[in-house]
Length: 191
Image (cartoon, rainbow, N blue to C red; front, side, top):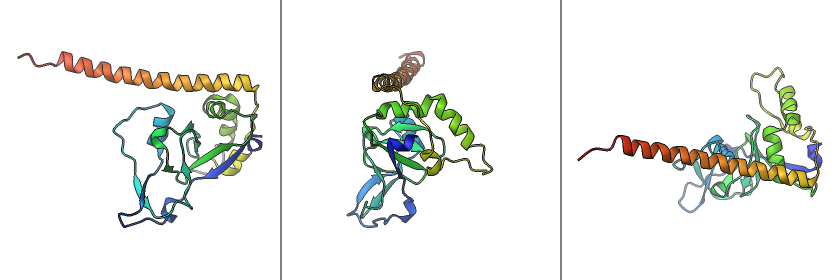
């Protein structure tokens, strides 16, 4: 079972944190779906401004760091946190997953959550319940079964996952630059 290789840390109920109204407290971004999409490489929104809160104390907050694994309890999407979002506060609808075994590669785990038929079929079973709001629970996360390939194969799968994400980002940048070029060339004012 996956719980034999990882620890789970719930996100924080943001409303329960002690917000600092003065200008002394530190500023923290609140991790959200847009940030998850950026970390997944699904979008390259350089202009996105996440919600920021000022806190006196972060001891009750779940803070994520670069290369931490985060899963959305609503969508089931999983990613490694980018350096851009290092130090963000993780809200309640997300969970941080910490690999605690040398038998499991973190990058493989992220890709497993994204693509493995093994996890997709388990998600499908979980989402068939009677609740109108479909959301993963911690109990369901803890009961996930994972079949681990060799570490060599895990590293290869994780490497492919990272490279696929990088390629996706490059394709988005290429498309954006192409549109800018065409716009500037085709609609250029002739003086």
